Amino acid sequence: MSESGFLRDKDGMSSTPRRSPRDFSGAPDTWGFVEERSRRLLTRYPHRLFPVLAFGCVLVVLLIGSMILRYVETRLVAAAGESLALAAADITDKLDVLMAERYGDIQMMTRVLSTLEGDVEAVGRYLEWVHEAYPAYEWVGVMDETGRILTSTDQAGCGGGCNSFEWAQMDRGHMAVRVQYAASVEEHSHGAVALIFVAPFKGAKGNFRGAAVLRIALSVLEDAFVPTVTALQTQWGTTALIEYQFLDRRGNLITDSLLREEGQVNLKRLGLPSAQLFDSAPPGFIEERHLRRQVDVVTGHAMTKGMEGLSELEWGVLVRVDREHIVAPVRQVTGRIAIAGVGMILPLIGILWWSAGRLREMWASADQEKKRAQAAERKLHQVIDSAPDAIVMTDPAGCIVMVNQQTEQLFGFTADELCGRTIETLIPERFHERHRQHCGRFAESPAVRPMGMGIDLTGRRRDGTEFSAEISLSYVESEEGRFVLVAIRDVTRQKVQDEELRASKEAAEASTKAKSAFLATMSHEIRTPMNGIIGMTGLLLDTSLTAEQREYAETVRASGEA
Image: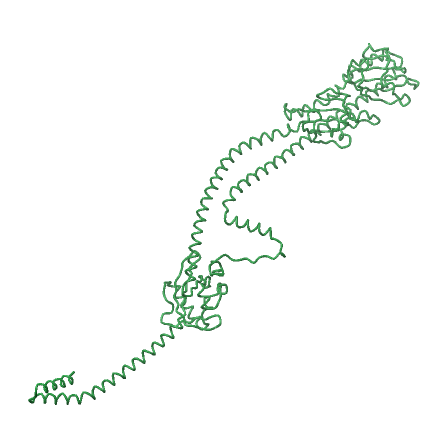
């Protein structure tokens, strides 16, 4: 039963509403089919989706967790990359300061040497003082205009010649400071790779007199890396493998914290992204693949500012750490959380699975009850539809909510037309007020009884014709309120038959009265002569008669008295 009453198929049985097919110019409604199947699945078998929903929730949690983990790792890598970039920039700033100091030192030396022209002993003492005052210098020397070493902090080399690059390439006319980091080994360098400053100086007459040479071991330059790398090591722990590399602008490796491959490797030619980036971008960081160990690393890069006219002092600094070490703490915590989560989720999954089984059993039981209820409802519909009387059900507001087939046949309305209308639709308008009074009395004291006892009730069909009706009332209590059941029977033919029977009875009674009057009259008319005959027969019997005559006379008298 729906809001519009019973919906029947062609056989009169109740059924579900039939939907009008949608017209898509003959195209198959694939989406509509999927939607309808999904709706039926959700309506008829929602318990089957419970495990799927639980599994989906777990997947969503895992997906969200992985996204959060990815986001946290990205932020950690970014923070670590910024730290590495700041470390590389700090190192380059220190190198710039250190090189500026050395540049100032050699310029000061050239001025002092110009005043000490010709006094080799005084020059030697001055060089010893410089070497002792500035331990950063591995070797300090002075060459004459021919390239011969006049004096140096290493007396074994004094008087020797110089075939070094710095002397051969010196522009004596320009008198500029030259810088070289030499991979070759001079006889006075003791095999150490060094950074060399060469500055020419003039005599009192302004003529070229020679050059001052400062040799700085690259290990001294590496000391600029130590405080910064140590600070990073303290921040990230001793397990973090922090590497640094020091290279020139062309990409040649000058210093490596792990492998001593100075002058043997060009990182730009090997395609290292950070080496290709440091001189073309501001200080920053990049995620890349380690060339030797083939692991993911985060590398901070920066470039020294150098000094005007000295491109040799434009160096690149790379500081890197393994990406795995950066994200390791988060992954360790995530792993512990995952283990704890699995310990909590597995029992929950078991409970959910058990609940799904119980829900499945309960749904099966409810489905059976539903089927039984539907079967009982179908039987009820069949009983109501097969009832000989018209049956109408009204809600507490007096609106029709259900009718049977007899109602449709009796009144000429369809169920859809009647449902939603008031019960007064079936009553002539002149009786509406009286009907409301009857309904009010019934509402005060509901009971199963005839309506309007002793009153001729009238119904109205759809075409306006009226008929005599016999109505019985009952009621049904429900959660929605009290519903009234009205049974209506057309008694027009019975009224006609009763009238005909009454007329026949009256005619029979009149005939009986006439017959009685006739019989009374005839009896009176016959009784008078019979009395005479009886009296005379009695007198005749008092005379002497023969036996035969007496028998005849007795017969006459007996017949008259009968």
